[in-house]
Length: 95
Picture 1 (cartoon, one colour):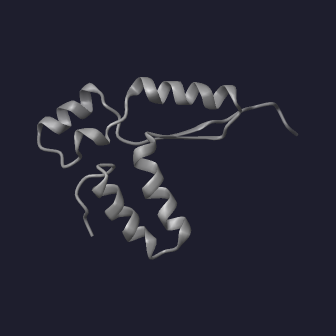
Picture 2: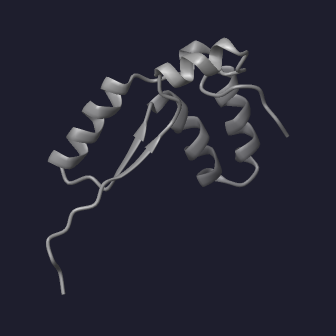
């Protein structure tokens, strides 16, 4: 029996915050350009709630190459990792 419960799944990537800035100060391999803003994530989540969207993936520069490549084919998972690292959406490639 439906109870009018809405669920929005939030899948954040790297978010710029005091914790992640501290992490980067200790030599994280993730480039600064890869980090999304907390305000951007909050805005995207609010839009998802207003529009009854089920999933929030943020920031987009991280999720597009990393999530779309495996969907095209298994061989593309490695291409997605390489692309993610190439456009600063991910840190070092570890295989």
